[in-house]
Image (cartoon, rainbow, N blue to C red; front, side, top):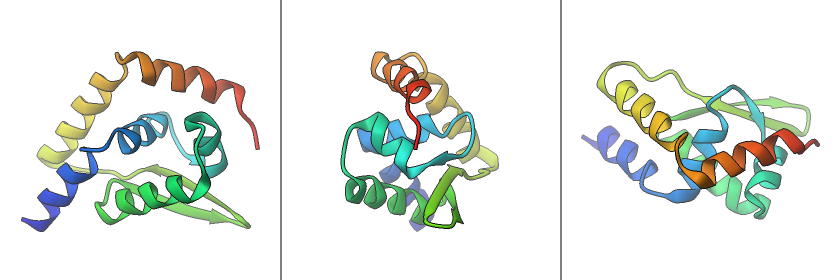
Length: 106
């Protein structure tokens, strides 16, 4: 039951939804997430930690950089995640985030 509550709580925040959407196409560095969302690193890290606790993302360290990607989620929760990400693609703010992501670099 706790896993289910964490899953839905993770999806209940706009910033976390934006982060998940940015990871849709693969691994991404925290610095890119920070640039796209135009917010500070502690806020991004706090949300990413929440997503990790919920099992929605995984992290990989590379020197001083941390790269995040979507976790593989199976079953009904995986289907819900896929539907959520598909719905997000149609949101104007998410499309703007995607455009900004194409323009940022470390």
